[in-house]
Image (cartoon, rainbow, N blue to C red):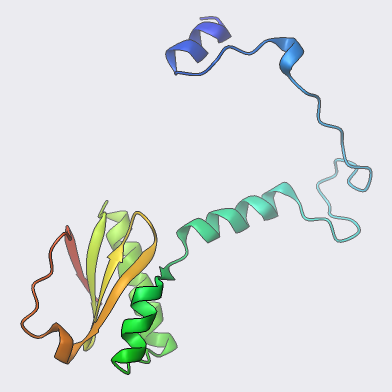
Length: 137
């Protein structure tokens, strides 16, 4: 199969050799893979971007709710929240309710974002909709 056929079948545009730009090697990095003069390697940058995309964030709404309700999770509780988030993502969840002790967090797994947070009192008698999973950690 020709490259152009493969690209068309995959929805890409065919490449022409005259459109490809050559990348010049940085003079401080001689191709050895070692970093010189404070330059970061491609691998370092890639790992940082992957970590940023998988890092759990709190929405402004969730932060406001936590402040209003006097919720101050410890680092251990945040680690457990992150663990529940990772488990929900591994199972293919899109939106999950994660219960950590007496706190409940509604998390958009696909956006890596805590949407809202509730304490025990606020969660009593509440109906959680638009979630596809629950993680108790």
